[in-house]
Length: 73
Image 1 (spheres, helix red, strand yellow):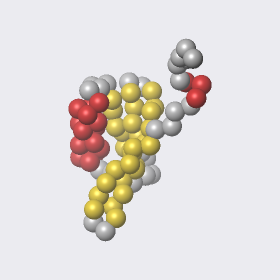
Image 2: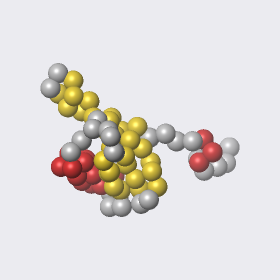
Image 3: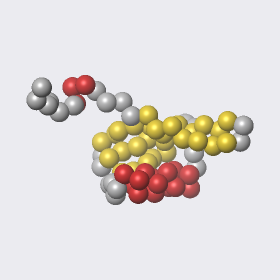
Image 4: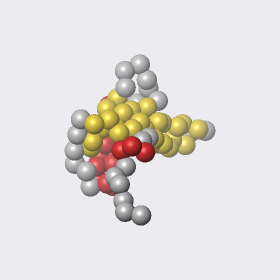
């Protein structure tokens, strides 16, 4: 992804989730994806899919069970 595409994705996600400290960063040696950070914490990857001229993006965020807060039963 080029710098303009990364910036557009960042603007979209910041607005959609109301998170001004969310950043999208290009990946070295990868042109089909970018990394997503909340502050300095890596939270996921956005993959670009260009199928038959229709561009879409897939945001993949792994959540470890140990990171989930406890809730009363």
